[in-house]
Each structure stands twice: as structure tokens, then as C-alpha cells.
Length: 242
Length: 218
Picture 1 (cartoon, helix red, strand yellow):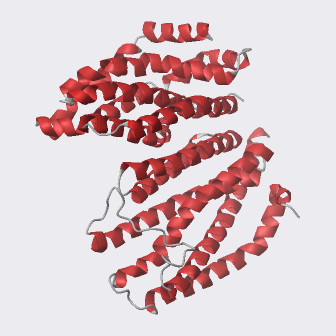
Picture 2: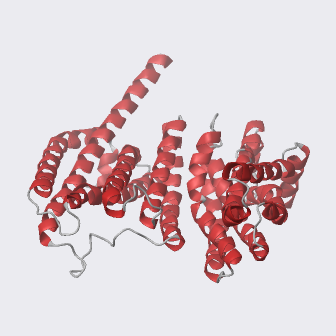
């Protein structure tokens, strides 16, 4: 079994048909437990109060926002190199999810920042680079919808994704150079010293896993929709030809 | 290649809107800003580096969709793709022609606009250096955006959405260089970063642009 077999849409549809209910159920369970645990069974932190609970949405969303672009980068590369059609569709399906994740991270960050920093928005490097990432997602989706021929669109967005990845990273470092940050350091660190306390850490881990599973379920669902839409398109075109 | 460069320059000059339009647009931006923020000299001096860079960026953006669109319409882009010179070279030449018609006039005229915005005299030199180093990157990245949208009927707005995020690093280091120059601070870091970004984009981005054009003409 290799991923190349799933370039065949029929095979992909058949396999995901079986996986999809499981991934939805698993995502619902882990996300449900993680969020309920994080929101109702965790003591309020000393100097943060109840607002600490926003991290159970903020951190996973932020992590997904970056990783979804990486996933799009990989799938675009697979498409560009091997003409793996399902791969291209998966990249297309992932982009709106990534954009929404970026938006969630920005909005929850603003909700947290208002009581803690006293401002909804600051031109902090992390905030700024997320805003730029959001713009990249918007451009990517706009290009997909603007080009009519699906193969041309897949090629162009693939190239855009590659170049965009380089510039998103470059913008991040440029933003760090440009302004000093308000944002705290990394939450997800293997370093025990700056690690958050275990009480907060375990529900957070569950939420992270839940977000990943949720993303997998969504991406499979959206890819299936894309495949069906393309089949419909092909049928319509055949009809018109006849 | 030189013939192509001369052809593009000649077209830009004779068809109008080449040298003059970008410069006039730059002038309008610079004129409008004091109306927006008020005529206080110290405020203008503070924001002058940023305004001048934003103006240069927008002036560059204005003429981007013309880089390939005209050639695409009359079919000469097909000829260029099948010509015995590499498409990457063609793209680089197109970017160079775009820079000579829009970037270079801005660099030359920038000190005058700097005076209008009450830019510190020490910063004038750094403004010219920053624009000279940064605008080639703007033109090259612009060809990438133009190459992506060349086959589209209404690509103009999409083009700006695609290209502007790519301009962020150049803008940050370019404006920072002028700001530090105005404040008399050390200018080495942004200077080197700006030069590095331009060198890397000029060397690498034409490959991406050429790939996009090949896809669009398939």
C-alpha cells in the first residue's frame, strides 16, 4: 500500500468512506474531553485568572494554522512532481480550514489580549506574522477560484504555495527584526523549565490532538466534496458535448 | 535579450504611461498624505520614510499587470516562450525593463519627494540607497504575480492581493533603513538584509515566474 494508489479517486473515496466516521468520532471525543476538562476542571491560574482558558483554543488553532500551510506545501509538491490529482485537491480543501484557523488564533488572541495586555491588537511580531499568513491564505484561495481550468489552477497555486512558504517565513523573521514583542514565549516547548504546569498541560495535549483529528476529518470531507464536484463537472461537460 | 530589453523600453515610452505615470502617481500619494495627517512638519518627518516606501510600492504595483498582459494578448508571449533564449532570461529582462521604467525614476526623484515630506537631510542619502536596493526586488516579485495572473480576464485586484504580502520583508527592511538613517543609528543590518533579499529574489524568483508562464500558456 502506498500513497500513490490513492491518486485513483475511486480508491480514495472507498478508503475515506471507511475512515471518515472514525476520524469524526475520535475528533469529537478528544476535542470534547479536552475542552470540557480545560474549561471546567482546571484551577484558575494565579495572575491570569479565568482568561488562561483561552489557550485551549488559541494554541491548537495557531499550531494548525502553520501546519496546514506546511501540509499544503507537501501536497502541492506531490502534485507538481507526480501529478497526483487527489493531492492537489487536498491542498485546495485544506486552504479555507487554514485561513479559519489563522482567524481563530487572531481573534482568541485579541480576546485574551484585551484584559491581559489592555489592547485588542498590538503590532507584535507574532501577531503581525499571523496576519501576513492570513493574507497568504486569502491570496491562495483567491487564485484557486479565479483560474477556470482545474489543472492550471492546481499548478499555479502549487507554485504560489511554494514561493509563499518562503516569504511567510521570511516575513516572520523580518517582523521580529522590526518590532519587539509583547507575546509570551513558546507554549509548546520540550524544555522543562519554561514548560507550563502539568494541570494545564494535559488538557492542552488533548485539545491539540483533537484539533489535528478535527482537521483530518474536515480535510477528508472537503476533499471528497471536491472529487464529487469534479465528477459532476465532467458529467456536465460530457452532456454538453453529446 | 538586449533587443528584447530595448523593445520593451521603447514600447513603454511610446505607448505612454511608462516613465511618467508611476512618477505622477508617486507625487499624488505624497501630496495626499499631508492632507490626511495634517501639515505639522515633525509628524511628516516621522512618517516620511514609510510613506515614501508605500508610495513606491503602490506605484510599482500599478504597472505590474502590463508586464505580460499586452504580450499575452497579441501573442508575442507565445513567441518568446518558444524562442531559443531561456524563459527565465526573458522574465528577468521583463523585470529589468519594468524596473527601468518605474523603479529607477522613483529612485532618482525620491529626494525631491523627501523634501516635500520634510525628511531629515541625513536620511536623503539612505532613502536613495534603500530604494535603489529594494525596488529591483519589487519588480522581480511583481513579475511573479503578473505571471500567475497572465491568463485571467480581471486579474488586477487579484494581482495586488497576491503580490503585496510578498512585499512585506522588502518594505520592513527598506523603511527601517531610511528610519535608522534619519535617526543617525547604525544602518548596517537592514542594509545587508535588504541587499540580501533583493539578491535572492533576483536570482531565484524568475524560475518561479517562468514556471507560472509555462503553465498559463499550456
